[in-house]
Image (cartoon, rainbow, N blue to C red; front, side, top):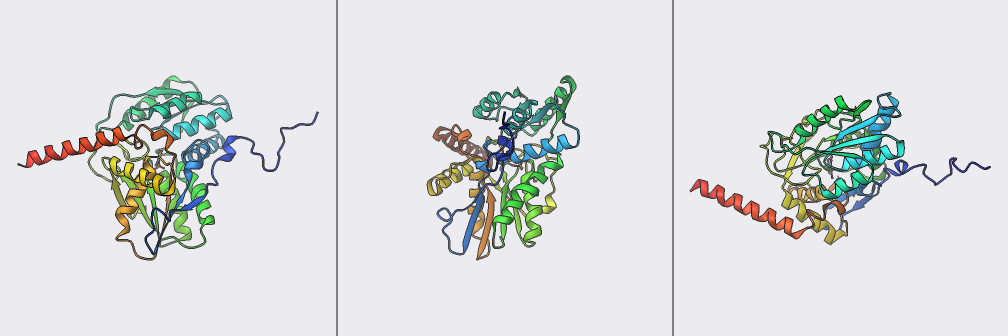
Amino acid sequence: MVDLKVESRGVKRSVLECVGHTPLVSLDRLFPEPGVQVMSKMELMNPGGSMKDRTARYMIQQGMREGKIRPGSHLIESSSGNLGIAVAMAARVLGLSFTCVVDPKTTATHIRILRRLGAGVEMVREPDKNGGYLDSRIRRVKELLHTIPDSFWINQYANENNWKAHYHGTAAEMADQLDRPVDVFFAAVSTTGSLLGCARRLREHFPSIRVVAVDAVGSVLFGGPPGKRELPGIGASRVPELFSPEEIDEVVHVDDREAARGCRELLEREGIFAGGSSGSVVAAIRKTLGKLPRPCRILTLFPDRGDRYLDLVYNDDWVDRLAAGQEEERTSIMGERV
Ligand SMILES: Cc1ncc(COP(=O)(O)O)c(C=O)c1O
């Protein structure tokens, strides 16, 4: 019989081969200012719904190459959602088992997708000293490593293959897609892997490029005080081992409300249905645009799609609740001053 399971031009062998090769889109309706061009890499078009497909695939493939992940290994990772979904997708293809440690900020949709993909889901409920859950999640990961045989912690916070996925993937593609130099690169940060991998590659091609991190108000990454923030995917309550602040020229902090406004603007003007951190990037570019030189070519990433945020940035009640919370905070601060 003819073996149909052989290489065939134009046919991928698995969904993992569909990761990457995303287009760059010019946001001319959102940023019509003369002398400005903003281009975004549509990472939301990855098959698992986010740029974390690249990170997961690369970290797992390298782990297998190095013999740290073997047939029968049980993968463990802490994730606010997207990396978890990407690892779960890869684990399905590769026949591995996977447990994802999440926290109450992970959206219900993320959790349902994780379960559908066959992942075990462990929820931590105890916030850490910075009001986030990262320390609690990592503590739980370490407990699981002791109890699950042949388990392997991918550890996106310290794994060098996190940034390398973007150095060899996302940024290599962007350098190929661009026919003229870019002046500024904006990226939302959490582990900082995507920003660092892209910055390292882009600087080889465009040595004078300015690298701007977009962080959440309330994140401790750049030394600010910890605070309440609800959007997953952006910000951190613990500084990751990968963090390398000397490679970042500037940081712009964006709060959840500004991120929601950015998402909605992006949808209205460009028809792009993106997640919270894409809205944060849009808001950060808006805040910074006035002081950037002209002409100015700006590059950014849209990390994930909007579907997983229907109960957050695309929910009017959620936005109203944030507004009410901020007003309450403002009046109590004013009250203290009187
Ligand atoms: C939607 C989204 N945006 C941005 C980021 C930040 O990426 P990184 O962890 O590479 O800093 C993440 C990370 O989880 C994410 O899920």
